[in-house]
Image (cartoon, rainbow, N blue to C red):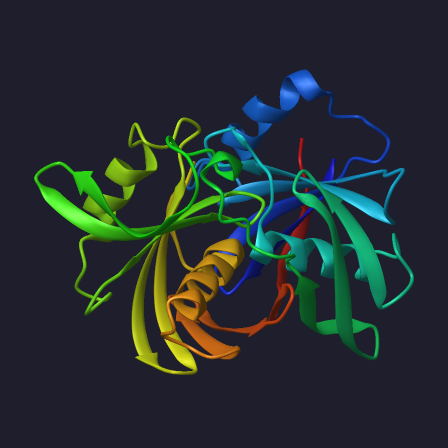
Amino acid sequence: MNFWKMHGLGNDYVVIDNRDGKIVDQELSALAKRLCERRFNVGADGLLLVCGSEVADVKMRIFNADGSEAEMCGNGVRCFAKYCFEKGIVEKSEFNVETLAGVKPVWLTVEGKEVKLIKVDMDAPNWERKALPMVGEGTCIDENLQVNDESYKVTCLSMGNPHCVIFVDNVGEFPVEYIGPVIEKHQTFPNRTNVGFVQVLGKGELKVRVWERGCGETLACGTGTCAAVAAANRLGKVGNKVRVHVLGGDLQVEVGKTLFLSGPAEKVFEGILF
């Protein structure tokens, strides 16, 4: 079984072409857990599978390191798009990717035969609690959430997957590894949630750390980056073009009727699984 190891700003994936269905559904969760285990296997934040699609050029399935299936991933879809183009699965620089969060258009910047930059239409955020899902009715914009003995102002939204965004004064010193998992599994979020911790550096600049549901803090999170920008924009903290500093590098987000995420993706190596 051939695979590529890839990453988007350090958010890393094992990518496998499964259009022939050689890996059956019953095996996917266990396979993801096994392949993503660092030091004992390839090691990654998740597993990406290329599948055939009836509604788009190609379909992406994403499995977290804990074996759970995710709806969408901004860094993952960029890696996926580069893989599909460079492997000749899709032979055009603009195409559509089916995900559990809907069909996502992608645009590739290509030099020679190598993809250097990927722009993804991440769709519009859904602010309704039921979209995450989240307990309660209506929206959750800058509301209090009780976490152990502390109360945090949170803004919650779906980018095809659930996000809880918290603005902090100094994200570098914030105890993400402690607060992140508590909020991820908070009773307010029946299906758990991703948690973004955001520091505003200016009208066009954010610094973000994300505790990802199913794999812990990662070096970058595409949907988390978009959720942070959407929340900051709605609260008047940033404008419509924002550079976001994540642990693995920088991403660009444009806010319009939908959110556009731009950033690189890299192939690290390829190999064969026995």
